[in-house]
Image (cartoon, rainbow, N blue to C red; front, side, top):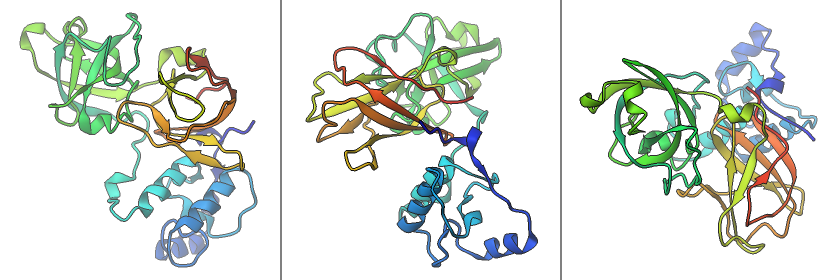
Length: 295
């Protein structure tokens, strides 16, 4: 089984002035040097990450300038190809990025939250998140370190705060007094994504949506160390196929995935990739996988 991620990325040899100068004048992402960054370059970079021999201007594939070629660059290249993509739309935040906003509190989120993570363990403090940061369920199940005037707590994102501005959180009623006096009602906070604690000693798990069959299926990734960016399945022709993410925090296969077992390739928001094999189709119960994202 192959793992591909930042921890095992291929180090680029950006060692000569001539190579750097040439890269500065070329089109970023144009690995095959045909003056355009397109699907052909995506396929080359994908093949490289799968361990195949690839020839081309590999330095141009380093879209985030971290001197590594990894799945994060592949994600950025795919996003950059979109005709409506702006610069800020395809740059993923580095680990530890600190966000600022305001926090309020409410009494929901443990049941019926928009992230559809029921049942949510009472061992966690929870929060709802603003729409821009939630980003079509991208940060569903994210584990956050939230800091206010009275201290810092960790919370799980289980619900939406539709009226909130970017950076805003709506903490559970009992969690808010741990970071600020309850009588203030609305306070400034900072927060960042941190590794989910239960992922330290347990693999990813999968939940199939009620009603899933071999002909229609929706699957949700659980117990992920970091938020999930993409989920792909290995098709019968040996190609990984990306499943579209829905607002209800499931990845949907409109024509189904078959009877299983399945091989999934999962990418987190930092571009780290794991491949999980032999995942049974168990629509009536949570299914534990075999891998976990690195720290």
